[in-house]
Image (cartoon, rainbow, N blue to C red):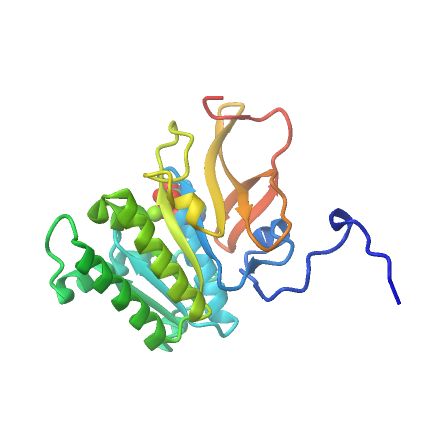
Length: 259
Ligand SMILES: Nc1ncnc2c1ncn2[C@@H]1O[C@H](COP(=O)(O)OP(=O)(O)O)[C@@H](O)[C@H]1O
Ligand SMILES: [Mg+2]
């Protein structure tokens, strides 16, 4: 028997295994969450909310019973924990129970003896294997690297960054991890990453930015790309509140900052 299939546009997203981020606004934009095992670039200028979104993603996961791992390069785990305490959704017991693990990547660099400014191919391999071993050891299903940009400063060459991301992405996918890679970009640049190759490798790109409305600067979020799901491409206003990130459609008449 042949059954008529309605056009893709009018159908709900296919029942693929999702990582429900737990940030309701984002899950709605993504029609149910990030396809499990994806590696997603979270790009934006300084202060646009990349670290905050990443932390809420992990806390919500840990609450739902998914182990979560935050790899921090630029901010110390102590400072991150302090900042997290300002949010009502944060629960200290998640850290104590090991459901949420925050690791300082500079400590890993020292332990592995990675002290050259520019890492060699062998050293990049060692770093990748160590990150994957840590993910396997913690049993993490959600991983954040904050930031890919700062690791990239030490990898430098485009083809090595590509290899690093491909190997890391394949390893994390095998472990069933959904990953956010934070990408720091200047607001004036209009790009998603330092080298421009990063966005081609990842499964998804979420862009955070600023927009001005009558003298106020708003934070905005846009899902630019997400393999394996339909999603809205519209810009949403993102508010950082004590109970977490809230999103609302960005109404017409608001112009992007500088645009
Ligand atoms: N609890 C909070 N409520 C509202 N705003 C906050 C809160 N915590 C941090 N912020 C704001 O978030 C901004 C930094 O966000 P962050 O996630 O660190 O950005 P990024 O990682 O993109 O640089 C800061 O400018 C700060 O004012
Ligand atoms: Mg940050």
